[in-house]
Image (cartoon, rainbow, N blue to C red; front, side, top):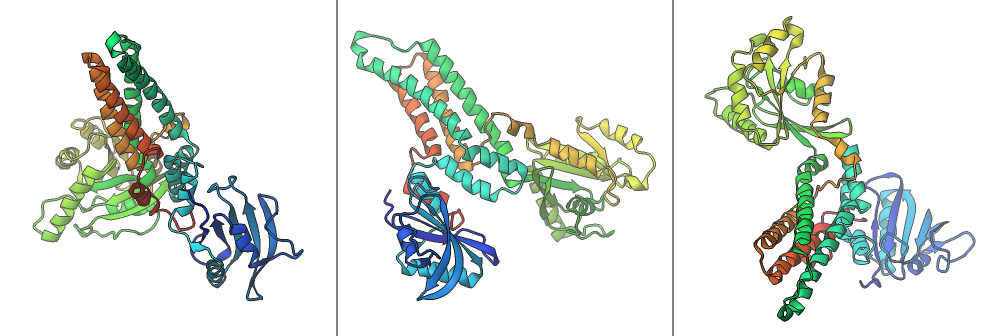
Length: 464
């Protein structure tokens, strides 16, 4: 790409801090910095060794603006692959803005969101899936999402795709070679071997597609709906899990009429807890709207905590159980929570009664008010997310764009398998392979458009 245009931006978070870092990239940015920078020795940055840090002063019309540290990078050994400069100044908002203005006055322009990473991609420093992982790494809010983004940024996903593309290119080259000798009726590709390779590719694409459900909840937080009858302690449980008074707690039935959401990190995993309106028959129009939203959240949740109040017995619980069960998605987990254990002596009988009509779900007695057995509930919640998957060489897909491309690639490879089984001409099989290669290339950026790049990088931070 054209690198003559120098871009600049503040890379540290907005606001006042001890220091702030401004970065530049593009041919001539070191010489540009020299025009406003003065070192104690009088030496210029131009001609200095790469990857070195220099102390000095930033001057504005001969007057001191700030004392700074300047780090210089020579192309291609920088994040963007271009000549780059980073200026560490004091964190005053005034200093940051004056320094940015100085750089613009000297010929730089303000960078757009994600433009540094976009240049790194266009200059071949990383592929598109790795570039997207940079944004995920910055946004990671838990140990699990951090590990997942880091693995992808290091090229774990790209390596899997490279293997797939190499095998697909091998198949299509053999098939297309046969077309060159179609009149001689020569067969270069062993069909049984091709079926084996195509079958392996199909299995891998299927595994990657299935991993998206895990990757998506790790990236965005595991949605956990807290549901049940009125006044069973849903809001009290939410407050206990969050360790703050987030929801109003009252003895009056129907207090919670809308959905309340908040997130918390438990054992390295981000959970998004959703307190819902109590399920009951009511003539209150507003409360009924809240109950409808409760049912909607059940269908969207990865985990549903179904609460019951032990003080009321479990006779009416069966009705609520079946109502909730019918609205669960196929891969959602239901955990039955027996609340208010601090107010009853008999815990065994209600558990045995509930087991008679349930489908083997985990039953956990707790006291949301006192916190009794809350640790066991948290342990069961974290167990629902199989973090062991992240400790293996398996790649976890967390990006919706990647998932859609993988689904399309899988559809194409399924047609390849069908064509091989039915003895379809190599010309048509090769076309399906090319389509599969196209979708895999969309993920890494080998096949892309300006519109796609614009949509991806517009969501980045300015300065990254």
